[in-house]
Amino acid sequence: MSKVVVEVSPSVDGYIAGPGVAVGRPFGEAGTRLHRWMGEDGLPPTEADRDALDQMYATTRSVVIGRRMFDVGIDPWGEDGAFGLPVFVVTNRAGEDLVRGATTFTFVTDGAAHAVELAVVTAGDGDVMVAGGADVIQQCLAAGVVGEIRLHVVPVLLGAGTRLFARPLPDSIELEQTDHVATPLATHLTFRIAPSDHVVPATSRP
Amino acid sequence: MSKVVVEVSPSVDGYIAGPGVAVGRPFGEAGTRLHRWMGEDGLPPTEADRDALDQMYATTRSVVIGRRMFDVGIDPWGEDGAFGLPVFVVTNRAGEDLVRGATTFTFVTDGAAHAVELAVVTAGDGDVMVAGGADVIQQCLAAGVVGEIRLHVVPVLLGAGTRLFARPLPDSIELEQTDHVATPLATHLTFRIAPSDHVVPATSRP
Image 1 (tube, chains in turn orange, purple):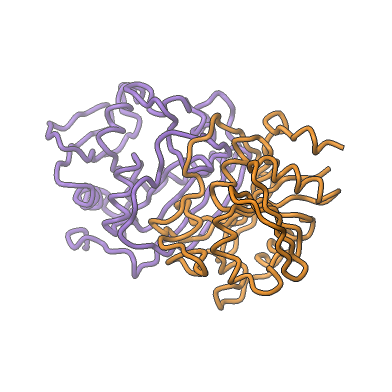
Image 2 (cartoon, rainbow over the protein chains, first blue to last red):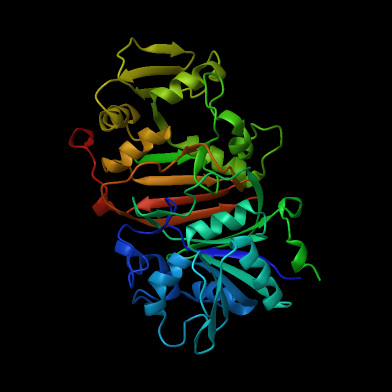
């Protein structure tokens, strides 16, 4: 069955972007620092980092992102749309699907949980990646649709920016750490959300 | 030479206490959940957790804490004051030293950095532990007096409470991860602050 997986690269102090996020500058002043482990910052990633990146996409068949992430990212993602997968964009503004190479962006106007439902159906036996931003991740956690959280914790205190966990959750959520790999560029931590806390939307059940 | 080490147990979403912190309830609604890895929650810690706890106190010769942590903790710490070490309390209210068994609480009214200076002198060749709360930890980081951060990340999303990193830092701070151990109860992560970023107060130099 599909897993819904949050994948995100926060700093040690919990920021997923620096101050000054803008169109074409998706991480603001943090630049590509938080994605150095993916090789986006000029330094070569280690083999373990590459493995974490491969694992990220190995079973992913669809992606959920927020409108803000789409707006600031669409230019840097280039002509192929970077993901090479169906991407569901949580937004208030309806729009036609946007096709960029192998990437299709579909705009979903009735909330993050519904975007996840559509993504689960599209993923078939594959997994759904909730890739950000922070608002969409928190909406998915609050809706109980997330099964796994993969944090790629980057060894820097950014000190300011966009917080991953900016808003309170309705309840605390127990996690189980199922994997951890540390490299000089990132600490890759995988947490499973206990099944009892994990509500799968009815329409996504086979 | 003395190291100044921040030791703290945040949840995955970066809270070091739940909502409702009060005198005698130092972690609020989170209860002892964040200290389960220390054996304070009725469950036995693993050997690796015990090792992390032993390491925490092995070289520590003095402690710095904030007034709020003192106020909410002093009752639960009991007649021996729990630390068994000289403890410097950052406060606006001057006061006589308070002796509880092998623990001496000294009240320092001119800021966290000065409390660290006094603690460094007292520690001799040993290390200084900055044990919280969040405000004092952030003041010490902003003042550039911290050499190492040991996070014992607890696998729970608390969803609300007291944030470890509530306030912006004046600058971002690069870290180097030097150790990591994961148990079902906590992920113990050690980060060194690059020496170039680490300003030792002049009076603490031998």
